[in-house]
Length: 452
Ligand SMILES: [Zn+2]
Image (cartoon, rainbow, N blue to C red; front, side, top):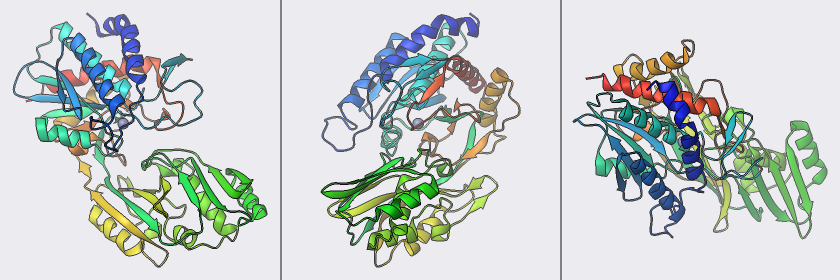
């Protein structure tokens, strides 16, 4: 059967399967309350997904509810496709229920349709096509689904420990035409020492720009006129309430932490506004001195850049813990730099009498030769299907599964220059791309099957 005919025949089934797995609110829970490593809902979704894999004749295995896989083909060599079933929290403000797959104007809406449940379904149907078309499967092809990608990829670490690495592969959790390099990641948290702020909470995850934060103060401690002046001047939305306490809420624009300049950080503006309004506080001083609104690392003497990209900095979350304020740090270090250098710069720069660095850890960058057979096999598949020879494979700031397993790069699902509202409200996927994406994966696997 022709690929295009196969895709048309299976389109409704793909949408039905995607709707089924989108309906699970599978945010990975790390609180240890469940008997499963990432929560009950997350575990149920893995069961459901493996059932779908079995229905299509894949050999399946549940790897202790950290991950699972479905496999076809024979041979010593293993091609891996790595997707994830967990999602970032839905957040408020969607135009339709994020857990109910909804199609409007050629777009499929739902949390996870692009990141990363949609690509899992597309990969499954790519394997189904290869299985049914009678192509010689001289290697094993394994679709691996992890359950905790968004919160540290513990799932993949466990998987690799139990099942080992792959010989070739891709994770459809980045962009086309393919990503041959990923910046090093530095994560951490900082803490206040003393503060007059009574409560504060903003951001859902460390790896996104915060789009909403509130802070609570003693009544009459905020200069309302100056606050209004600051937000009007900076064109940022806010809300101020004075009841038994003063409460200031700031609204920003979410973006991925690897592209913080595309968002507006509500936390940064909250602290800048407090300073502008003359609210005197040790932690406000600390925040504006060390964290602030700049996203290029210049605040801690680390404005680094190479020909593949620049360093990025993001403070995604802020919250109260045991009477202290804590905030998260997410830094992406250019691929040719040593992440340890940045870790040391943070240690030097993030401590003073008003606050301190609570913890910090650095992960190495990933870099493949863009001319290597595996990268070329994948990029050629994309070009073959789309005829797009203009956009080039790239280096990004995002940390994907590729860093956690050998011989893997991120490949798809996002097309260059398009915004799918990943990690934001109204995440979507183009209906047409659901099929084209699948076609690209079919060709990609076919190309990988030809490698030694
Ligand atoms: Zn993802």
